[in-house]
Length: 182
Image (cartoon, rainbow, N blue to C red; front, side, top):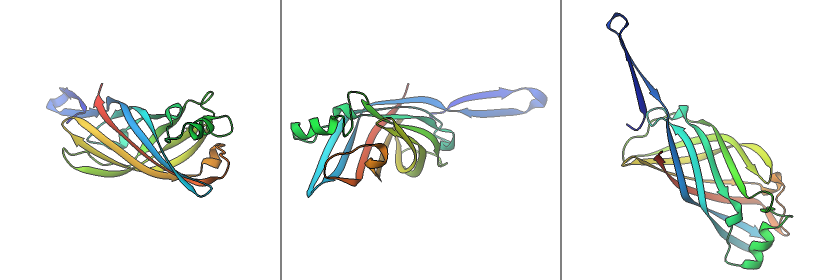
């Protein structure tokens, strides 16, 4: 078990074991997106997703942390489109280089070696300086001390002040990273 365990014993021969969340981190993750602009379906990527969490594999409800997506790394395969997307009207990556998710609650459960657990992460997502509460589905797999994490969710970029000419009010985002003990 990857939790930091504290053992207390003594009083009247009783013993008590407390599970304490351990610090995990990820870097080098990725995010992909599908976004419709006028009649064109635009797909893109952002490398360098990072995460820092305190996690107890035996009690996921105790998990807290953040996930950071570097919007300044956005790539769609078209330099002019990338420049427009990073511009002040859309993402404004000069001022807002990243999107963040602050995890406030993770549905309980336990990670078991080699098995994938489906859970729900709730918290605040911030894009372009606007924060809103969101809940997203998450899959987590514990494998040799590392935790593979993935999610896919949709949101309305207009609610975050992201305006791209001809852009849809719906974007699908996929995020993946691997957490390791710090």
